[in-house]
Length: 307
Image (tube, rainbow, N blue to C red; front, side, top):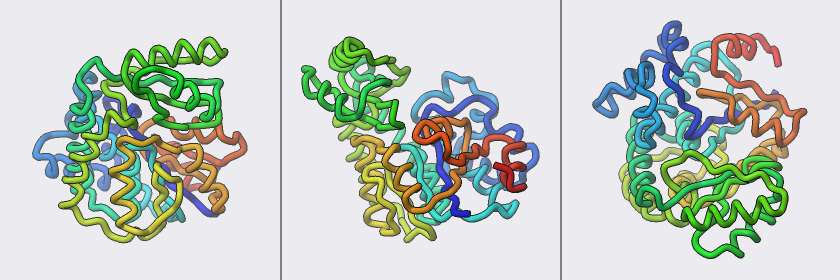
């Protein structure tokens, strides 16, 4: 069976998200210790004990989610799980995917996403940017609404056939939400600290580009499917460029799922905290085989061959 491993992004964190795994897995404990050493601070304590408001900060939740995702990945590998034929991650999750494919060292990834988180948080002054999720309009309809609204509001993510996310200036996002609701769309403002994946984040992309220039990227063992173009690649130069571009360009998750299916993926394994990606994949096609490896029972079912 052809398997794709997919890795969650920001928002999937919760206090204690590695507790049960670390209690039973030497691989997970070693991963947490490696993250602590990479950052020179006890990230593992924050992951386990919180407080939640500190864990939720962008500069913290990005390395935290990456670390827990890699901890689950290493437990899968230690227990002989089938190797994936493709890997992909949603936004931040792309770093976990690169670690999984052997293109990026874990310690380097932890330090990079700390820089990424701080840069993304600082790119837009507090209170000036926001995001909203729209349900009931196509990406084309949302793009048309963005073009009709004054100010900066842009497509930030196409997550499923029924969910599109926009980002931009607060006034522009609010105007777009009103226009979308007038067309029968359900619009929900997201609890985020910055307008991710839009042109307002270009300064953060520039900061990340400087950091990435100092970090080696290897050719991955399996193709990685970047968010920005949903096209699998093993070219380190393309992967580096994609990491920079995804900061201020939309996440094409729906296209990514469809491409993986077209390339023969028969099962998606979500590796990391939560089950967000499983939900999005099922909204693309309820018949798709998806397993979320976020607790021991799910891991046992996967290794036992259960769907």
